[in-house]
Length: 142
Image (tube, rainbow, N blue to C red; front, side, top):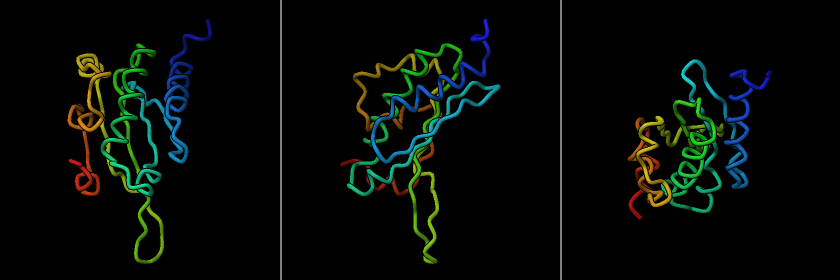
């Protein structure tokens, strides 16, 4: 059948990730990178910054929702990466998207995590790969 093509599966995984993130204003977009079969989800954390949410916790909650669900639903995926961007204004008045946080979970690690009981704040620490900007590090631990 036509539906066995990896492109369709990738497209579906990307659409699925978007449908899971329902917070308004995050503007998630997602792609599946081949050949490594990684679902990459990128979203804006600006709404959380505006309402002074705990970025680490808010981001962890989203990651906790997307990662296990996507790996569960799409057996071909090998990993899921979630990146949170924040808009920063420079002194010239220009806006730049800055990566505030990135986590990448490979399937074996994700499978070993009891996601429903994990504290969202701890999600970043559990990742196989992570990048955390000082901006997020400072909001941590509240």
